Amino acid sequence: MDKRPKNLNLFVFKFPITALVSIFHRVSGVLLFLLVPFILFVLKNSLLSEVNFIILKSYFSLAIIKIFFILFLSLLIFHLFAGVRHMLMDYGFYEDKIGGFISAKFVFVFFSLFVLITGVFIW
Amino acid sequence: MVNVVTSFGKSGLHDWLIQRVTAVILFIYCILIFCFFIFNKNISYDILNMFFDNIIIKIFTLISILSLCIHSWIGLWTILTDYVKYFYLRFFMQIVINLLLMSYFFVGIEILWRT
Image (cartoon, rainbow over all chains, first blue to last red; front, side, top):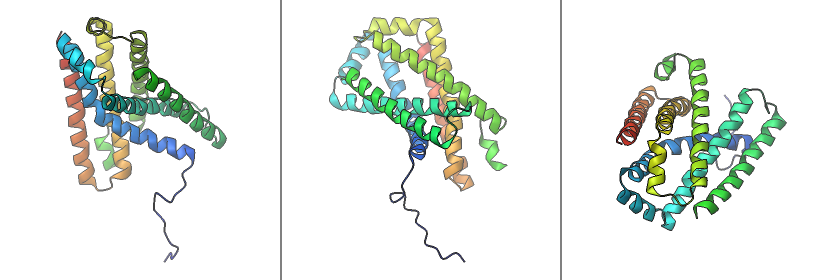
């Protein structure tokens, strides 16, 4: 019998940046799936009539909705950049360990940059 | 082999390809929508309505919603088969997810086909 202690506490593990990109890609995907009704609701009300559009627009001037919307967009932006990296790797780019680390860093850099720009734009 | 029956395509390779094709469609659609909002900062009802009234945009939007549903189907299948080991629970969750995705698609059609 294997008597070595097992440590499966996820809060104790140290994850490499490549693992973080991978897991956030999955988490953002699931959350985006769950947020589709929100987007459909916005699309429906923005196209239904001018009155609905104006009411919707007034919702979007609320800080809480703005923050929520920026969070939603950051999920989308992360998923897009992680997806681009994933497909580049499918085509054989950055497949080695160093390339994987560098591209993972680029995902986080581009993500932060674009979230910042989006945040300023929405606000 | 039992895992394969709840997948979207015929095989893992088939799913793999569909996942990437739908990803590219969604990527292009996102760029389009981002550009639209960047160039129309003070969006009005008329501009938005005109945009989605365009038949090309309308069809592209519907294709994107369909792609989104297929992309999610495959993506969530991948995640479920990784983390939910109990078959009946996974099967149940997959059905709930797929019903939701199909509802998303029909709601999308209903919204865009109204006008």
